[in-house]
Length: 356
Image 1: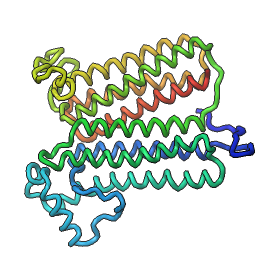
Image 2: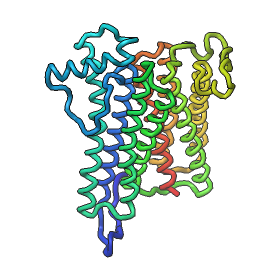
Image 3: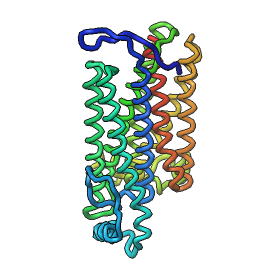
Image 4: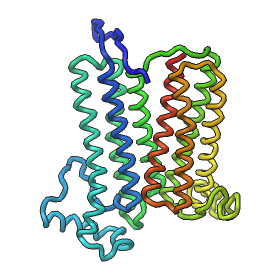
């Protein structure tokens, strides 16, 4: 990627020359922090740590610091459905093991807020952020705060009767994180990318449409994957490409009304995720093969070549995760791989737009 350029920007009443790289690198760093946050969230879910903290205290950053504080925290957890129905008899030491991962997840979210706000104010004070860009960045900051609230609503759904969070809220939480990540990454690329010379307008329009379609398909696949994760639907039909010898699960439409099967039937939810993932992989390969016939700038060609590589890696991780019955390491890598594929698509799409 070619990073950075100096350009004239209108700020207030005057025009000044501004190097936009610091703002771009800041936004890119924030996007990476969000990616780490998503990985931590996946680990908390996979290890059962996400329900260890039964209160939401958004202004509190310190963990328990005394034996009495730990005892109080543990007592609150012992009143939760997860302790009573899953971890009955758990020791304080074992509780600390799951507590620390969830604590790190929540602390990291607060650190993202600080990493956003402090440089944001500094860049405004030094004139590096124009009035035109300010509303979008302020909206991103507010969306990040709302994401914390959505995360708590998700956790709260697993503290009432069953030690399982709502798979709908889990999917919403993941998609909100994806939206924040996409906005940060795209904004960073706006600052760091430069225009390149390449193919004609007609070819670029087709490329944009193809990448846009693939991006939508990837988001649908990730949403379906969140439903699979929330329902623990990956623990059934652990074979590929067939589903235990069948190409379509026989119990796919057992629930009533029929439409609910697409969201709550474990077998159909897994089938949908498989189908969308396969379509995403095929689409990535076909689009890349077609793009090789075009006269593209070398940088843009490399971006497009990364898309089928990321799609193939993600497909391999998904198949391995399924065949191994969702081990923590592979499942976490599969979730991270989805964001990497999304990043490759976004990077390629931004390059095509810049080349136009």
